[in-house]
Length: 129
Image 1 (cartoon, rainbow, N blue to C red):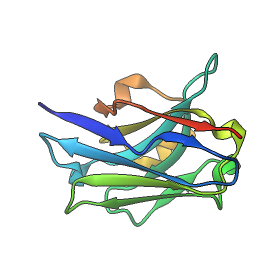
Image 2 (cartoon, helix red, strand yellow):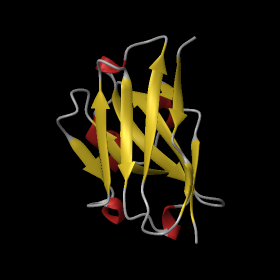
Image 3 (tube, rainbow, N blue to C red):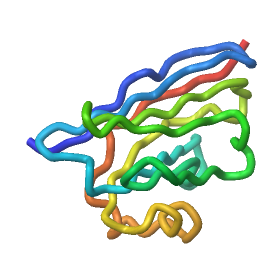
């Protein structure tokens, strides 16, 4: 079964850190750019970070620049999102998404669900004291 399995969400205090993992099963991530999206209650899903197939290029939305870092280990078929200095407004369900589209377009253009080949299962991140 081809799927993306996420892990690493949880409850953390403001200023804390979490690392999300997104592991592919049944297919190889080598040829897919990966986007990290989040959706807070009552809000639309928004792009947080995107990473190219090689991992050499990344994009971050302004609100997470300098705090979040996306990386990938194609040998492990896994992509990561390191989140530091977390804020309450980062609270959301985080999804990874695999696409054959360009990583930059994935993050900078309005989300088109038809562009996504695989969605992750979602990981709840709650930032609260």
